Image (cartoon, rainbow, N blue to C red):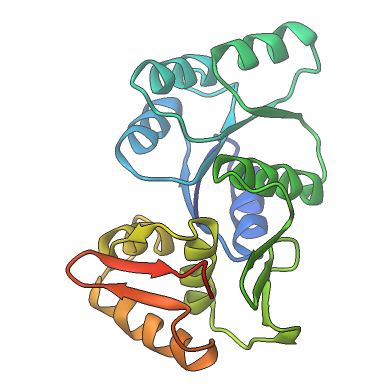
Length: 220
């Protein structure tokens, strides 16, 4: 899963990126509203953490532009001012949730997980597909209760498929959601991660749809 952080304060931006990366997400960072708007409009993020008080273009304007352009991805806004007017303005602009600075990283991560789950139609913190379970709180996966040992990229591929069970996901889509913007991407490596996952999962759980991509088989 790939997250965009739009925050102009360098130390906080770094802390956010490191905290979100620590639970298995890929993170891109923008330090002003203009760059954030462009990245959010042109890249396929699974969620965005957006500061309100940004230089060059404020967060409310950025959010309104995304929503006007039809971008429906979950957005969590951050504000340094604990005023009800700013919260209302953010929600009215299209925000899905908000946090007031200062905040605990654990709360931000919990809210982020919830937004991503709801966007995919999942109610529980545990995603289940047949014998496979993925705990989004601990970033761990198991088969029939036995924990799986996964590399960071294997986990990212599996987590994305688990958030989209029964859907056909192309190699290009997986590549876009498991690598950051500045990473040298190669869609061929997705095949390697899929092959490794198949060795660790029950047969048939990850199905290849010829010419289209992969599908997590919910019938397993």
